[in-house]
Image 1 (tube, rainbow, N blue to C red):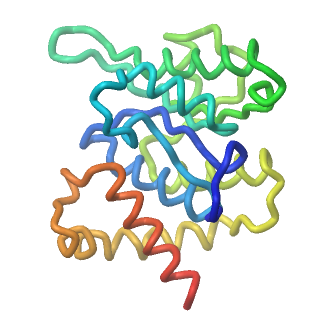
Image 2: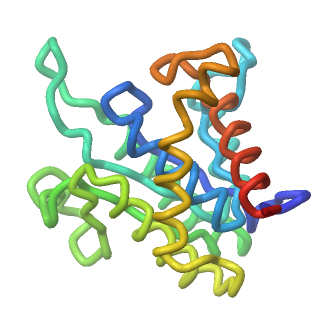
Length: 207
């Protein structure tokens, strides 16, 4: 993990933040940290005077890398789907296309649930390399690891077998860690979870 993370270390996470998606979000956060990067999202900011869209734009501006999961296409109780994820992906593409030279260096990893399902609801992405995770955390880990290794060219990124083994060890210990911190897994705030992951990785690496 970078000691003083900057533009080339931050990874913006654009995904659902509900209980159903939690296992995938946990895998995303763990993998980003373990690969030596820092995950960020609008959930980091606690300033109520700073509206959500401003938070998103601010963090997208600060991140060279971003992970976008556009798999949440189910309709809610009132019959409408959620468009937040495709909207944030559009902001990221806009920053890359129309921004300065720094912003033009942005790189994205886009996930969907089932291969080629995006063609049914956002066909403008035809020709873009989109990865299917099939709601499997291990596929998330491998996808992010390979993407960061290719995009950043960093040789310090561990192989996928190491990442998967360490993640499974972490998940086995997570209920106890979270309980000791005074939370339940379903209610732990994003910032606290990130801190737990950071500390667990540092402890593992020191051994």
